Every structure is written in C-alpha cells, then in structure tokens.
Length: 146
Image (tube, rainbow, N blue to C red; front, side, top):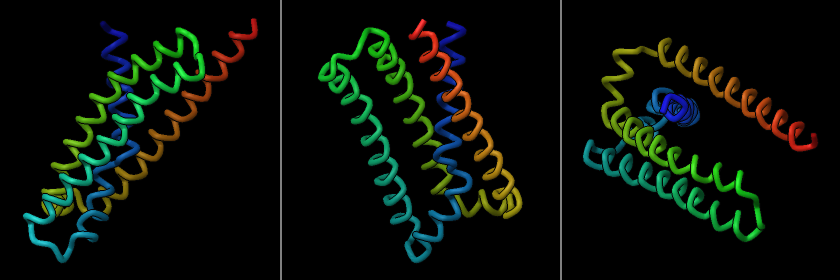
C-alpha cells in the first residue's frame, strides 16, 4: 500500500510539473482575454477534457500495442501502473480547470514573481523526474543483460 501511495504521489507531481497549471494560467488568460467568463469556462472545460481523453486513449491503446508486438508480462505490469496514472491525470485536469477559471485571482495573489518562481521549480522537478526515469531505465536494461 505504501508503494502505491508513493507511486501515485510521484505520478501526480509529475503531471503537475508537466501541465504546470500555475504557469499556464497566464497563458490561458491571455488566449481568452476577449472572452466572457462563461466562454472562458467552456474553453477550459473543453480543452482539459480533450487532454484527458487523449491521455486515456493512449493508456488504453498501450495495452493493445503491447499485445500486438508481443511484449512481456513486466510490460503488462507497467500498463497496469498506467491506469493509476489516468486517475492522477484526471485530478491534474480538474486542478488546472480550477486554476484557469479563477486565474485572475490566482495571479493577483501569487504575483508575477511567484508565477516565475513556481515555473522554475516545476521545471526543476520535471528535470529530476526525467533523470530518475533515465537511471531506472538504464538500471533495468543493465539488469536484463545479466
């Protein structure tokens, strides 16, 4: 159970760093600056539902691709882990929606410098996750040759 919670937390933070709703909120507000609040909410809802659908489709198609190419049982375990991933991505889409529709308040409270600092922090987290994935992948590849 502890490993599952740790994995879910890692996935959640990874998606948060990738999507970075705090830094993307000013971009979203800029793109929808001429829209009324109802339209802004509709655009946020539609775009994040589409993002969620795309990720879910790739997760579900991943299993078919594994079967098609005859990938091993450990590969199927990875696919199973990706289904915990879909839930984390759904949560991040919801958080992004909340940030986007309340973006003006968020920017006022955090400030431009705060958004800049958070953006840099998310970039650092994303880089560290990438390095960790590389280390684990290299370790697994080396182990498979032994």
